[in-house]
Length: 90
Image (cartoon, rainbow, N blue to C red; front, side):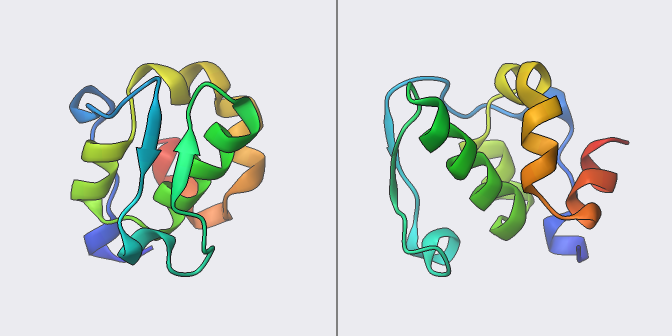
């Protein structure tokens, strides 16, 4: 994980917790998935995996919520790389 993807402080995360969200192409280019209903757990997990893996710090702040990752981290951590897990666990 390079410096532009450095972890944002959990308190800075201001993204949505519910509703349908469309990610910009720079995040969704690899997966091809752009629209996510955050009220559906499977889509929510894919959304977070994509943002954590592909996003820069400003993307993390914009698209991730501070409450959801904490409650679902035990499952979410299995979907991301070791580098992402290490940064997020600090």
